[in-house]
Length: 142
Image 1: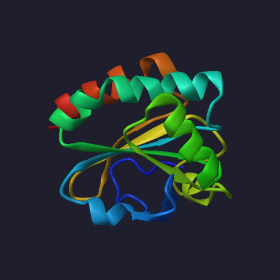
Image 2: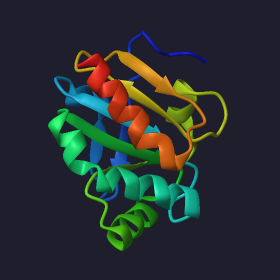
Image 3: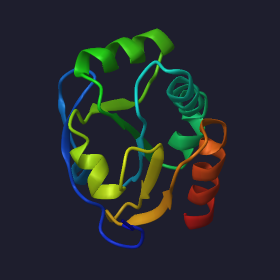
């Protein structure tokens, strides 16, 4: 499945506090929508902490970060608290939203432009390289 260049699939999911978040309500800003398999596992933790450590870079690019996994809301809250994650984590228990963007269960990201279109996709990303790729694309596209 390739959504790059087209409208971003819209969704509404519960965040780590149980509040509903709708992607289309975030228009006007860049959005990094990143999918990860399971909270508090080594790769997912490395990726999430990388995003946390680049918080200022994402803010400077006017980008909101949405991390999506099949974990429960309670698991996401625990993950956010344990690692001090200052961005939104969303629960997609059946993986339906991920399937709208990508085939299969893989660590992938989509960069959604302020108009709601998928400007860039990153498939099967390595946690250590994720932020450099996304932030590089944000600089290139902005």
